[in-house]
Amino acid sequence: MPLGTDTKQYETPNHPYQGERIASEHSLVDRYGLKNKEELWRAQSELRSYRREARELLGQAQDDETVIRRSEEFLNRLKRVGILDETDELGDILSLEIEDILERRLQTVVYRTGLANTTQQARQFITHGHIVIDDQRHRVPSYVVDIDEEDLVAFDEHSPLADELHPERAEGQ
Image 1: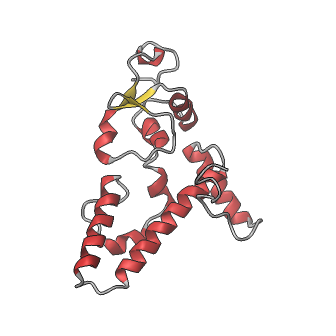
Image 2: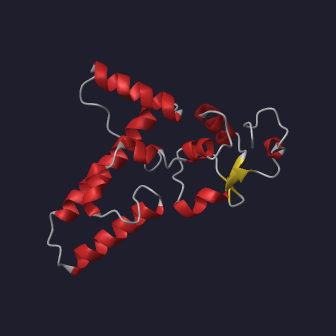
């Protein structure tokens, strides 16, 4: 077995059938064009790890230099990827929602910038290699887009979709 494949990157729900949870998961999968619930569970696990780290840092002495440094590094990382605003503090991490994580995926950014008509089409453009970030092709829809990379998301210049008259291009693009 290859290295790193023996552990899952997400936690499944504790109870197999909860109608309300299943309905909310289904709505998120549809809204963000996720392939399956595993992608949603991966994002939820990422959110849980952010909250866990924030609680751990908040629980330590706030005047300790290492705690201050770790807190600043953690906040800067989340601000760089756009999960937090510049004015947010450590306590604001505890109020994050799953949508805050899903909005930073390349798939959602491609859809929100108008390069695709739907989130599913955005996913297809990415996996087929039509999307680049600063001339670097990305084929992973779950790639987390940094704030400074957001304006660099575009069609690959060699892609047929780079032609504005292509029938699959979004209206007004």
